[in-house]
Amino acid sequence: MKKRYLLAPGPTPVPPEVLLKMAEPIIHHRTPEFSQIFAEAKEWLKDVFQTREDVLILASSGTGAMEGAVSNLFNEGDKVIVVNGGKFGERWGKISEAFGLDVKWLNVEWGKAVEVEAVKELLDREGDVKGVLVQASETSTTVAHPVKELAELTRDRDCILVVDGITGVGVFPIPMDEWGIDVLVAGSQKAFMLPPGLAFIALSKKAWAFAETSRLPRFYFDLKKERKSLEKHTTAYTPAVSLIIGLREVLRMMRETGLERIYERNARLARATREAMKALGLRLLAPESPSNAATGVWLPDGIDGGAFTKALRDEFGVTVAGGQDQLKGKIFRISHMGYIDTFDIIVAISAVEMGLKKFGYPVSLGAGVARAQEILLEGYGVRV
Ligand SMILES: *Cc1c(COP(=O)(O)O)cnc(C)c1O
Image (cartoon, rainbow, N blue to C red; front, side):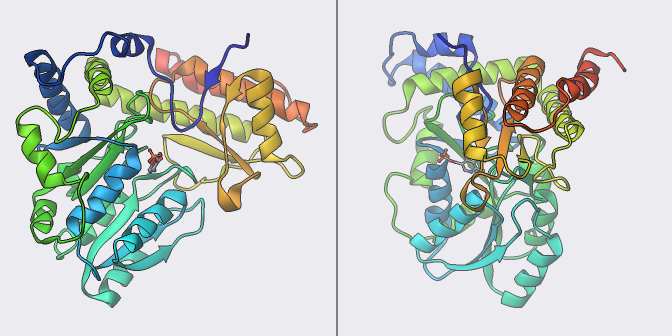
C-alpha cells in the first residue's frame, strides 16, 4: 500500500464530500429533484465566472468547449489571431485550422507571456481580424497572459476575445463582464475540484451576435441549442447527472469560502511554491508572469525530468507533472489550484527536495520547506 498525493495540474484532487455525493444512486434527469440541482449549479457558476450571462454546461473535457467556441462563432476563412506560447495555445490554432479559419499564429517563447503591443500590432496590420484566442493561464508553461489588457484591444473592434480560462477561472480573478471578455471557457478537473468530464462556456452579448452569423458545421456542441435547454434547467442531451450533482456541491463549497479567499489562498500557495524552489537554487520556468494555478521549475543539468517525476510518483507517492514537447524531461510542474492547501504544498516541496537528493543534486534538505512555511504561516495570521 502506498499513500498517494496528487499535485499535477489536472486532474486535481476531489474533496471526499463531493465524491460521496457523486456516489449516491443515479437519479433521473427529467425530475424536479434534478432540475433544482441544475438550477442552482447554473446560477452559482455565473458567480464564479463573474458574469450575468448564461454559463453553458457541456459533457466533455475542456477541449470540447474550446471546439464549441470556434465552431459556433466564426466562419470559414475568418482571420483569427492565436497566441501560441504553449500546448494549449497551439490547441486553439489546431482547432481553428480544422474548421478552416485563417490562423495568424502569434508565437511566444515558452515560459513568457504575450506582449500586448505585439497583439495590437498584428490586429492593426491584418485589419479584419474576427477573433483573438488566448489562454488566461497556459498550463503547459505555467504562464498567465495579460487578458485584461487584451480585452481593451478587442473591445471597440469587430473582433471577439476568446479566453481559455480552464486553469484560470476559480484560481485568480478574471471578471468576465467587467473586463469585457467575450468568451470564457473552463473545465471540471482543474480549479473546480471535480473529475474530468464537464466543460463550461459563457458568451458576451457581442459573442452571441457573432453566433447568429456563424455557419460552420456543428452538431453536439451547438451553443444556441444549449442556451435554450439551459432555460429549462437542463442540457440539450442527457446531462452528466453525477458530475452535475458534484458540481453543485463544489460550487456550494466555493460560495461558503468566498471567491476572494480562494484567490488569496491560491496566490499564497503559488508564492510559497515559487519561493521554495528559488531557495533550493532552482530556476522558475515563468519568473516574469507566473500563473497562480501551477509552478513550472527547470531541473538542474544532468537530472532527467522523466526519471525524476517517475521517482517522485512511484517511490514517494507524490504525483507532479513533467514537461511537454520541447520541455519534456527538462521541467516539472506543481499544481496549487482547487482542493490543495498548505500541507499539500509542504508535501510537494519536501518530495522535490528528497528527489533532488536522490539524484545527487547538492540540496540542503528542508531549505525549501522552511522558506515556504514562512509564507504559508501568513495564511494563519502569523508574520515571520
Ligand atoms: C487542461 C486544459 C485544457 C483542456 O484539456 P482537456 O484535456 O480537454 O480537459 C485546455 N486548456 C488549458 C489551459 C488546460 O489547462
